[in-house]
Image 1 (spheres, rainbow, N blue to C red):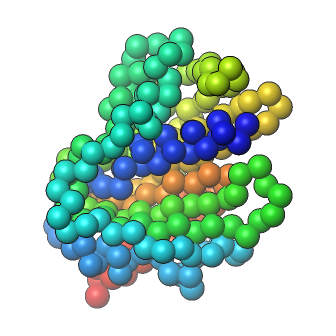
Image 2: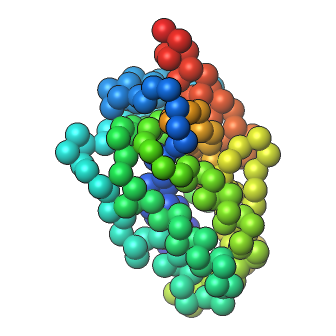
Amino acid sequence: MRRTVTTLSMAALAVAGLSACGDSGDEDLTQAQTAEALLTQEDFPLEGYTRGSVTERAADAGTQTADPDDSLAALMEDADVPEECLTALEATDFGGSATTAESSVPFISETEGALITPEMEVVVGTAAGDSPLDLLNEVNDACADVEVTDANMGFTMTFSSLDNLDGTKITVAIADQTVEMTMAGKTEGNTIVAVLGQGVTQEDVETVVNAQVDKVNALAEG
């Protein structure tokens, strides 16, 4: 069970290579500004989480390339999945998107005894192109419940749309256990704010997204 959850988490992180594209806007955040805009320990709106280290996009990163074997599409390629679903999943492999700026930071819960440790990866980025959150919305439309077999263990993945946020909630059911991962956020001009959450509720993800959007807007206003 833990191996399967880890595999799915890695795939979700690959999809969340996300970290970037938005629609047209007035001013793009610089790399330094994306890092400055990230929520601090004091800013984080939920109790019981500890802030990790900030990861910044390297100045010479150029075009990022995701490992296709770590994508959700790769995970599902041997399953009986409708063609339109696979096409939608393949479109969410954002590693080849050229980002102009991007920073992220994890917040990890101190909860003990959970099946998976509650965690949220908060991302602030800017780039030109289609928003990856819009592409995740398309996955919700194209993918119904999907039966997947991994290491002789069958499980079901359900992609669901979210209220008040763009993105998707992935529910993984294995035997009598259920794990949820949420990739969601909001696009403000050329800036995207996104959260990849595992073991957390949609309400908590929305709370964090809104807090991060408010901080980005406050910095933009001066």
